[in-house]
Image (tube, rainbow, N blue to C red):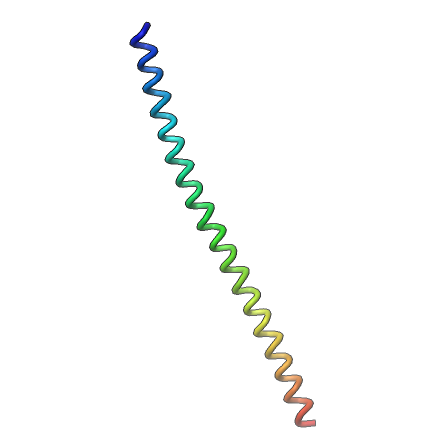
Length: 66
């Protein structure tokens, strides 16, 4: 009976270790996904700002010529 309890304890410790490893991997993946999303959002804001600046410049050039 004691041997069975020792085996169960060892199995529980192994499971805890495995779960801790998986949790660490998920945290890394989560951080990477957050960085990727932030990067895409920044790129979208940059493109929008560039488009607005381009339209403003075109509008200014048209008014200046007219």
